[in-house]
Length: 254
Image 1 (cartoon, rainbow, N blue to C red):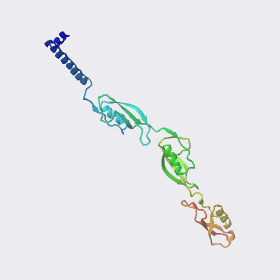
Image 2 (image 1 turned 90 degrees about the vertical axis):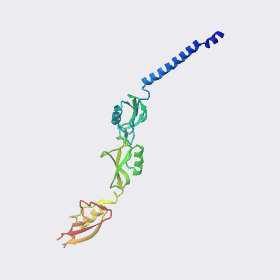
Image 3 (image 1 turned 180 degrees about the horizontal axis):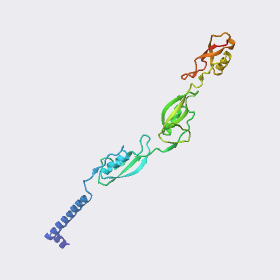
Image 4 (image 1 turned 180 degrees about the vertical axis):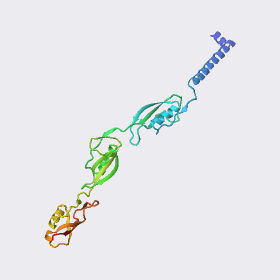
């Protein structure tokens, strides 16, 4: 034991110790710089922001920077067109090496759904139903019908669509509703050529009333015929409200 301690005190031991420590330090320095050279330590480029770009534009941008890409997944978003980047990994401005793969998530086309049954329902009910099916309420128009604000027709792409038909989720649906006036308006009958009794019966059958009766050059009222009526049937007027009085002018009967 005393010899070992004496050896530790010798110049030879100290020289060997210094050489050993120096060798270890040199080895560590070589390893450090070698790894730095191998991995290009401190070198790289920031990942560009791709979110919101079309997949074509994103790929062009990545290829210009010497980066690769991989589409990891695709999802449907009602307010986004298909083929738009919505997520990326690594995040924007992350420092990466050339040829690094950037993983993308993009939007896809809307899936098809079965159109719900909305016939005969009120506008408020239908708006809620379409919202639950992730469909949009488009233009609304009104059509003469006894039912007010009740759905008469639903149209997609200009065509009537019915329950069970396939339609892309997120589509805009045009609705045709009843105006509630269908039962209060009737067609104006053509009274020309009818005698007074026939004219009165025709008006009664149309839920209209006989208004003012006047004569024009009539000697024999029994054989007189309607030669004019007010209001008359025209291109702009073909319906009037129930109970509207129709004035007539009778002529002939000479």
